[in-house]
Amino acid sequence: MKIDEIKTIVKLMSDNDLTEFKIESEEMTLCLRRAARQQAAPAPLFVPAAVPAAAPAVPVPAAVPVPEPAKAVVPADAGRSALNPDKVIESPTVGTFYRSSAPGAEPFVKVGSHVEADTTVAVVEAMKVMNEIKAEKSGVIKEILLENGQPVEYGQPLFVLE
Image 1: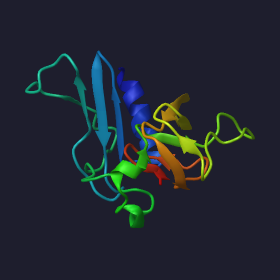
Image 2 (image 1 turned 135 degrees about the horizontal axis):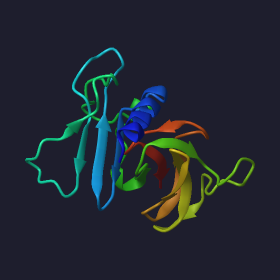
Image 3 (image 1 turned 120 degrees about the vertical axis):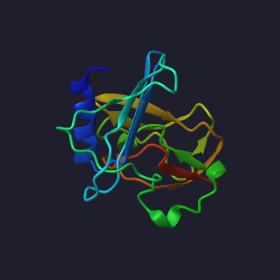
Image 4 (image 1 turned 90 degrees about the vertical axis):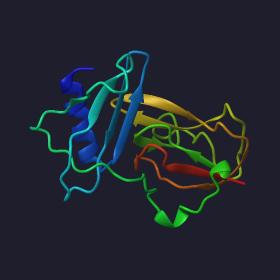
C-alpha cells in the first residue's frame, strides 16, 4: 500500500469522524486508530503480514496529524452498549452504511425479516468499494440501529436480532 493511499484513508477517517480503520490481506495488515480531534498522539502503524511482530512499524509521515489511539470503539448510541453480542450484527469494516444496493431500491432487510448466516443485510461503502454485510447469525431483525448514509466504524452494531 502506498503512502498516498494511507494519507487518503487518514483524511477519510478525519472527515467522517471515524476512530478505527482496519484492512487485512495476504500481503499486509493496516490498522489505523485515533481518538477525539483535540488530543495529540503517535501516528498509526503499517505492518506487513510477512514482517515478524518484533519488527519496527512504518509510521505515517508527521505532515499528517493523527490523534491518540482510541481505547475502544463506542457505538453511535452509547446506551446500546449493553446489547447481547450473540444478538447483534456488527460492521466488519469502516465506511458508510446503506440498507439497500442502490438509492430507491428495496432495503435488504426490514424489522421482522428472518435472516440466516449468509443473508445480505446491508452494504458498507469504503473508498468507493461496496462491501456486502452478511448476517453471520440466524434470527429475526428486531431493530435497525443506523440510517442510510451514516458513517459506521469497525465493530459498531448495525442490527439487533430477536
